[in-house]
Structure formats: C-alpha cells, structure tokens
Length: 151
Ligand code: ZN
Image (cartoon, rainbow, N blue to C red; front, top):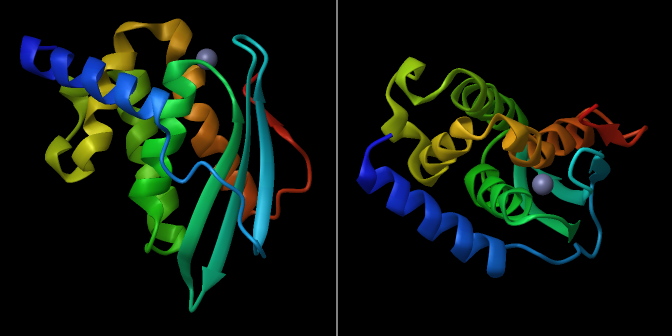
C-alpha cells in the first residue's frame, strides 16, 4: 500500500471509529440482525428500512474496536439508497479486497471510501472486525433469524 493510501486509511478509520455515521436506532426497521466477533469482542446490531426495493435507511448500534465501528459506519453510508442486491454485490467486492488485497481488485475507485479498507488487509487478524458489519447486513437482508458470528 502506498503512503498516501495508508494516511487516508488512518484518517478515515480514526474519523469513522470516533464518530460513526448512522449510529442510532430506526423507529420501525424492516429487518434487523445481530453480529458478534468473538476474536475481538465486537458486537453490532444492524437495522434496515426497506422501501420500493431499496435500502431507504440503515443504522447500527453496538460496541467494538475502531476498525469494526469504522467499517460499520462506512458500510451504512455505502449501501444506503441501494438495492439489497447491490449491497450484497458490494459486500463481495469488499470481502475480496480484505482477503486478497488491494492489488487483486479491479477498478478500486468504484468502491469510493470503502477502498481505504484495503489497509486492513495488512492486518489479517483484523479482517473479521472489518467484515462483521457486512455479515450482519447480509443476515438482516436474509431474515436475521440467528445472530451471526464470524467464527
Ligand atoms: Zn475488532
């Protein structure tokens, strides 16, 4: 990772980790799910409001490390206004970025701010912190029956 992206990574993770966006509850969520990353102790609850086939609103609550909180914050911003299918497609690309590294990714600029999550790839133990919000999002979209765990 070049120095510029590393600086941006630290800036975005610290910013979103300290001041997570969409950190609240929804009044009447269409679906919710809870996720837990026992490796780190991150715990998240994701709530979605679906309307006209789109994620009209999304919020999360919980507690976790800076990477888990920042990733959840970035996730809510990235999927809001998109369809569940688009959100899951984005998850697939983020997952690829986190597990295979930035060099394998085609057109990383399409990921926008999420591209900074490439920085997590250099810390494999942190990958589950970064994917927790996304796994929880997927669970919510699929019904959210059982809490997800990254183990
Ligand atoms: Zn964590």
